Image 1 (cartoon, rainbow, N blue to C red):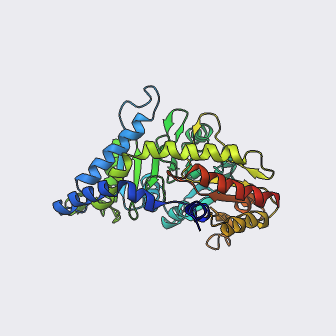
Image 2: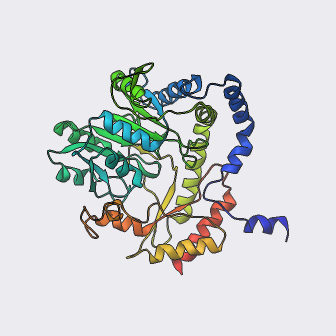
Image 3: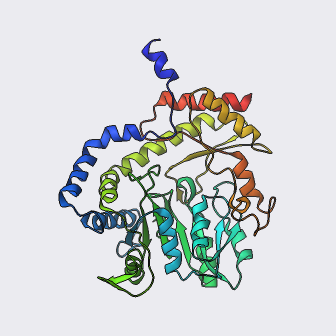
Length: 392
């Protein structure tokens, strides 16, 4: 087998972190050596620097003068903890209700449940996979303590009507920005529009750590100060706790890794957008295949490239996925079961048929390989395999 044939048949992963390591491994080793030499591993200078740099990134992404200063950023141990602490800081507690989209990762609702509150599921917009603003108001009750808008797959939710509704009803909005760091909505960085923005640095994110890590964004200095206490057992000063807190500190190793990767994020985002553009061009005319949308005013970062395979059930989508696998191409379904049908919640919320767009999305979505370094030949190979399966 010659090298050309070998390359043509070689597996295409969903995400190639090995290639990323090959490109920047020396930079990361130097950063880790700096941490190891310092022997300071918790709440140190790397974490503080990362907080400043993420805040500055979000400020620099805003057009005009919408920010008078960078937002505050508070590092925590995971994206899930970011959601939990943000909800708690927003006043959510036992007996409250929090409106969340039904089509997202379980952590969004799980953070609500962990505080003794109840997630109330709303349906999504079919084009963006984000919570439908028109479905939110009908779910508001006197117990509603917050609304969570998820910026899914790298695309911001339609925040203007959500924020307007929330302001009228005096309900805080939490942005689950775990998948969309770098995305913008009408000139503002996703994660900086609501009361709190929650980031995840899970390794597969577009800015991924070497383990779990997260961050919370807020425009409020007082809220940031409280969050810094909450993440460290509620301590307001050494060994003095004013309230119950968490052990949720972003460690120095993860912060050092993320600081290195952050320097490359703009280049990686441009590469992801180029891959997405090539996919869009190749798949745009394939019958039954719907490529991702980017509504006016929303800037997609394509942390995940998700198509829809039109069908009345998951069968057609699954056939496409099986065909890709037979060609050595990885794909994944984010997410096969909407939250209102999860065993965790199915006994307490309306069942199948209650949220049709979320259920339809779960049957149709398929995420394709996307990462910096994906070649034109690999993109063409993926698109060709999708088209073959769709037309079969």
